[in-house]
Length: 299
Ligand code: PAF
Image: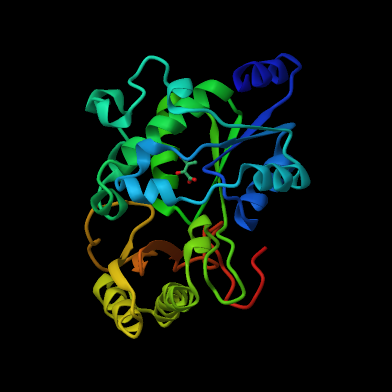
């Protein structure tokens, strides 16, 4: 159905913008849809909680879902079409149960999947790359829109699109609540204490940006500073580190840094949160991540 609809738009000479999502939409998704609506003729949104990219069954089961609310939000945001499907509808030639998939059934997510999310969530990017390839094949979009909050995912998807030869991948800035907390579907799962703990991610990132502005260029200094900020919280930190966005390495880059993105993953109770910030944003052309301070609007 989505395939026919997109083919019909192309036949009419219209450009399709795809916004892949897992539903439970928030302001961040709305900003992707609005950007797609401004830059393409028809905006198509996929809503699919992709079981291929979840390691823990429990995480998949409790991922928030509200299809009706999502469709209302999308209509308001200017989307033209939304679709979902089941695993066997997306992959009729593969087993209906993820547990029966062979490693060769998955797309190779490439070199940007190494380290950080790839290390802490084994198989995650294989699952992301597999569904994203299928969504691209179904919709044949001219452009596809992704949020910068999932920084490493944007690198994996850009690389996939380069290998496929389409679409143009557009990365949109992270939206933050006034508190600094990056908008995420998972925020719905936070209780008040976990939400307060979650604020330490952006605090640590803004502290890292402050250090960059003072001239620091040693990755270990950023790790130490972010570690000390996060250490004041009850968060269980998985990583708080920096990478060179132009030369991705699975491990810590060699100093001095020429450009840097700081990345954090931490658990607030049972909710896993990630966030990142380009430390040199504002100094060079077109930094992808958010640029404003908490409390300022980055919408
Ligand atoms: O970022 C997400 O919501 C998902 O990883 C994506 C890109 C929709 C693939 O399932």
